[in-house]
Length: 309
Image (cartoon, rainbow, N blue to C red; front, side, top):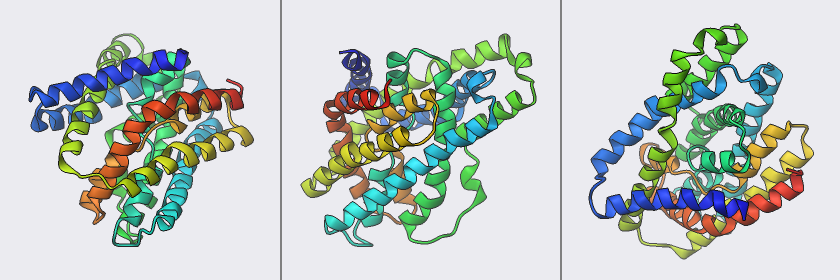
């Protein structure tokens, strides 16, 4: 019941975004501007507010574990999804790589935050989540991009993203013992900006879903395959990893929420820019996002039981 109480507000806010797009209040141009504001300003502010002074991130070995699990979890996801794409009859050049990247990447940012805080009301967990997401971003911009376009080239500019920079800056401030200097006015400003990040992002996600459903026809084999991979096989792998590996209780809480998430939307953009198949990415995102509202309570409850949360 607690999981459903945490999930319903998320669904309602996403629904508001869908209605705003349907009635053309939130146009595609406005949506792009809002998402840029979230990614470039609001999310970095939320990140700094939850990392600076966070005692759980004072140990660099622990930071390495958290980011390492984020990176490793995505690599496992890529492997499982890419392998399953072969079982679906997909070939290189016809969507196999795109399926592997999209189904292998959970919605690691906006959707899970309200669930995490509702189920485990500890603000310090957001710092753990954002550090975990650095590992996810590293995997995404290295292995993910290479897999999507079928080569091994990489640019350092891929890592110059505002959310990643915010995590690094926050960790350095803590390491240098400068966090007391950022309390008061700077922290309040970050908290004010950061508090708007998740609601706005969820509204934009809802608007984006309407647009995706308009543009693409459903391929049931891809849709069902993505649901099996993203919402069953990969969650089992992540929860098993959290059970057997020596990680903190805080990281286990993050992982159980991450395991229940649908596919991330960003691989659609990667598919467009790096020679993938955007139509396959759209199928995966729409199918898993729709079905996850049914599977999420079961995955979270089962995961919490297995991990002793």
